[in-house]
Image 1 (cartoon, rainbow, N blue to C red):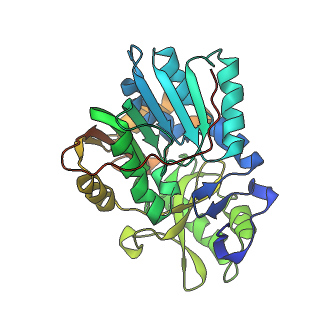
Image 2: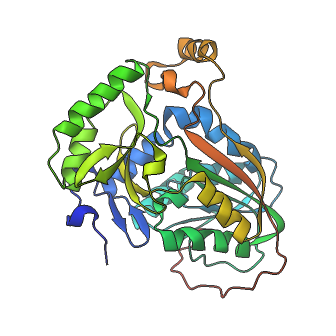
Length: 333
């Protein structure tokens, strides 16, 4: 049964993006938009390069792509010699991924499944590596924790995982076409147009007017949609809205401390944490000078990281074995 945000169904206007008891669900239009934008211009600079090296020189290692979406990284890993297992809860994402895998002529290297990342249909100690890139933020609290239980269960001892998550949710990241203060004023003008208890359709319609904003986060405060100006105002697991380059996506909020506590709880050893950003304004200006117009980044990317990347090593001591859950799977190859 769907848990519809603000009690109303999402509309086709923005691809029927809803929040369910299993996480964020993308409709057909949103799947297309997400597949085309991938992680956006900031992701291509401050996210993808920080887990891409873990998918190289794989030599037939078994790799889990949890929440694979349109499968760009499954395809990359397969080309690097991995035996890849890609899984996503949404049939529309799976269908898009199948087409991409077929086009890449990799159906014998990638096993694709429809299933829940919090209830993986794989054996214990099966994978050498796993990636979970901006997946956990789509999950409600119960599924959030179970996702990491399942990573711990299915990865081999001393296996590795890379976990990507949005960061700096109280920062407005723009494309640099305006100043940060101008972007803030535009956000306030748009929020003032919203009624109390706005529907999902109205939220998306209005926030998509913020074309210069690449990333900003919103929550419901006293029945009004408000910009998150301080992450401390949010509760763990609270529903939020994230404005991305081409989408408005409902997520759940989890702090960095919450991630770390879950890792410790399930013996997931944090080997390294990346918070990528421009080191100074000179570096940002040099990047923008050579970047395409749609890839330029604003001043907030100096000293503020839009993503955090956790590099995890799996430990197995003193943890009970879990039952292998049953999940609907569709295998290619």
